[in-house]
Image: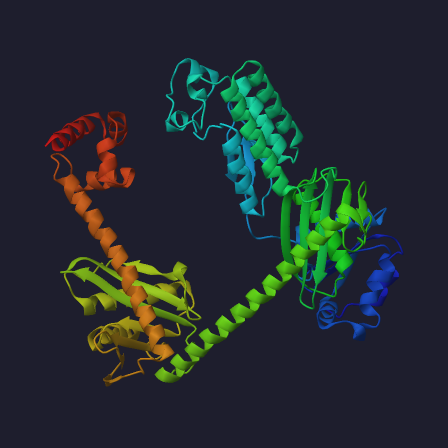
Length: 603
């Protein structure tokens, strides 16, 4: 496509508020922006371009088309910009996304509701509170509920018919006082729902109603001379007051406020959000967002305020910030307090964001230091083995078997000096019978790399074989058959003296025992051995269980595997009901199995 004729395009842009979109030569939206004056804002990208930073210059060089939408106000432009950024996700826009799936507290929509934690919101399930970026605070609230109330934790369907038909029996939770037995009708649903209402008020940040509830219950019990019950409610009230005193950080008269603070450096923005209700901080979260272009703190803070209020479903009429927002939000007052309790709130938010920024910098410095150490070890390994390139991707193979039984081969993968466990693989030999390490190694190496070639996946920079010259030679033959020999370096490590062998070279290499590169090879070898042995034990255990089941008259290998797959253990099979066994095996075989198990159990 020809170079963008920005002068012709600018002639059509009005001096009105709106949103503009830049497209590249493939017609992809690469940037979305808002402006109080579209003409002034858009023209600023093309006039005095030598004053732009490197990233903005790159954006301008890729623009091949321009579209704009006129709106009534700057606030409308903010809304439309936010919608379009979410829709198109342009590469030059900052996306205020948080990849973490933070948990919610859900009060389920069912008879005798449960209070559970969940990460995916489905409004049909019940009423959701959150998300909780600070999980410690979430669990503190749940622990308080355990101390104050007796909500059920079971998953029984407690509809009125099931309770009337006495389908359920109380469990241990009832006997230890954590539940009042609604499953047997021992607790009226009306009383249960009153406690649920108290919990919902606490989750909304309204402590006054739960406190009033416990005060009334305490006085009611005292008036009936039920002093033990009154003492119980008094302790719960004290627990609630103590919890609130630890959580209240400012004047409780501060009703409903959102607090935001932002700081930035040359690479990123850092901000903190606090949701305050009645002096009680109900939500808090800190975020880092990498810079894309030469964005201002005011613009990014405004976008962040809109995103976080939407995410936490905030309806607060006041937003406290450390710098003014770039756009006035409808129905929301933006304040920058200078004195008083609101100033203390803002200072707390700033303290949190500065600590978060420092923590990020310290972690990055630590990771860079660790990365330098790993790179040094890989470079040492490259030099010790005289490799052509640094072995960022290493794979190591090991065979595990005891007296030829249940053979298993393992392959572990290290990337940049650390385990990449998602790439680990187990192999059960298919073409080799009996204990034959050489043939087994040839088979699994063939299977591994024929698969990678077929999938056009990345091949390793180095292959390590746990074994001496025989295993190494068998593995080299596998690579030759695949046309990979000479393209991927391969070595063997013999256990006795930690000798390193190369294909077609009878003289081993002895690396200094204190060398970091030898320690990395040993670590790979040991990890492959551990991974293989774990699978080998699992396989032996499964085969032993299957042989136990096969010893029962009328149970063959297929039925034994079916039982084990369904019930997991022999113990669970013993505990299974006749109905469960019939569903799985049929009535005749289930009856026979149940009789045999009873005989074995009585012996």
